[in-house]
Image 1 (cartoon, rainbow, N blue to C red):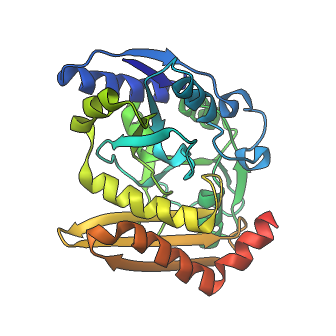
Image 2 (image 1 turned 120 degrees about the vertical axis):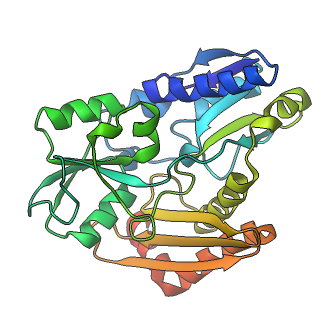
Length: 302
């Protein structure tokens, strides 16, 4: 089997983890590195580039033309509308979904001094940080995890906001000053989830990946992606969505839409039976829109 992956250290780790798990279940796989549009454009903020699929289009092209059999993605990078002929065939068990603060030991987001320079590539993180701490100076930062950490150590930033999952996978948890409460600082839809994408008619690949699929993660991802689809926004939008099973018969979800400067944040939460995961995501999106999220998204995107 040929696995398509981006070339960063984190993406390689993720692909190697999928390779290892496939081997445990009797399938050998070779990893092929693909450079995506998002990887090439590291000189500008993701929100400035615009568009969807910045980190997936070239890999998906390899699936469609037969050069690849399986794509390994961070789910939060995957648009809700996939190219015809492709589908997500498995979701690995979700890693830590939280965002974290990289700063001096013992520092917290609340304790950062006014005017502190905080680096992030995410409008969602920027909006929530500024909503909690309006006096911060949030600065866009691109590059892989090691590049961002190096710039922080060099003094370009007082702090960084990153995903816990990536730091854990690359064994950089010692750099974390604070884990941000996901019930207060909402994660991105799909954060911490590895998704596997294949051709819809490739029954052999689908069968090989089924032992890797985690049903609870897939339910949460279904709800989160249904919300994004209803809002018609991509992974660079200042939108958060986090669902989880809190009991066998209860799927809870919270979501947020915010202006990038943090001056307005619309938050809602709801719950439903697991079988209603997609409907839960859509209804929560409708509630956000009714509360003013439509005006926020229009102000951002026109």
